[in-house]
Amino acid sequence: MKAADKIKDLEDLEKICFHRRREGRRIVFTNGCFDLLHLGHIRYLEAARSMGDILIVALNSDQSVGMIKGPLRPITRQDERSEIVAALQCVDYVILFDTPDPLPLIESLQPHILVKGADWPMEQIVGADFVVRRGGSVYRIPMIPDTSTTMIIERIVKRFGSGNNPG
Image (cartoon, rainbow, N blue to C red; front, side, top):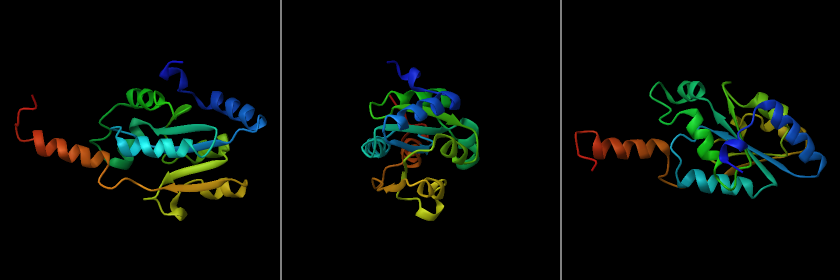
């Protein structure tokens, strides 16, 4: 299967989730920008996938990333980010979203498990109440210290931003 085949719209994912639930499969949902993929992202997604049978990654659209991270982000366009994330073995499906948060997706897809990074306090995890009310679970995965897209950008600017030759 090609990575691009894992990128779905809401209608397709609703059908997939309905059938997987009927089969007794546990659906895991997470979301994020995943702008410059790094080791922290990989370990986070692998940990999320290990919590169930199917991992759905909701990816912030370019517009959504800009609202959250500012006008200089994302670095990588949504079509590229979605295919890169979909190419990971641990990811079953990717869906893009434009809304300020993924609550409409969580309510539509009804995952058994909701996962976010431990940098999110439990009371601020969007959709947590919905998942728990339906009998599901919410988990926070520890972050890898000193690993983030912002840190990568800062390193690049420091090394190459003042006319240093990248070659």
